Image (tube, rainbow, N blue to C red; front, side, top):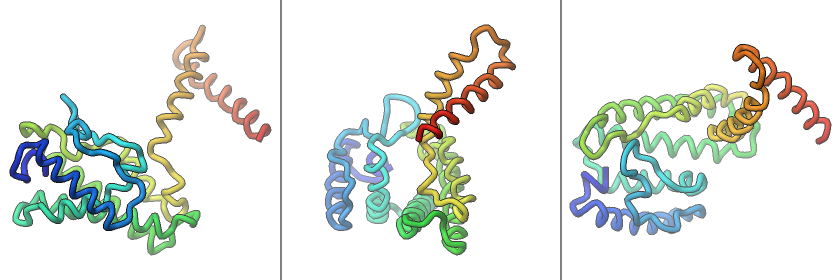
Length: 215
């Protein structure tokens, strides 16, 4: 939105302005995990499909407050969807602050868990509304794309009073799926489809028993 719609120059020139400001904000707030460069439009915009921010997990996490301050500087408060984006970014940063305040705890305190869950659901709802607002517009096919990982964030928030969301990783399923896929390939030979899952679970149980006894 900043590069293609709000700032006055070409998208690439606007991105250079954004990147310069990002570096200033990194220094201002003492953020350790920074992007080393953010001077190409392909950092978030692909040739086709949904917008997707590139970067390591720590870099993405570290940019939350920076993006909020960028948006506060350039957004138009008279535009409703801009105000929605501002609130969504504030909720995202608030969630990060709560997690940082409880990073040594196994679970969040009752008050913190209630606030974290409320912030997560409000943030997710705004994400969905913004995605619907921009769906189909030229040059912005999927702003604030709604993904399965956002759904998992909601579940993490619901259980934050018994398990700290820092101990639950929405991306870990990708590694898990790799192992399950390999296991499934080994268990499907000579079996009917409905019998494959039973064999997979049996082999998984034996493997975990061996692994835990080994540890």
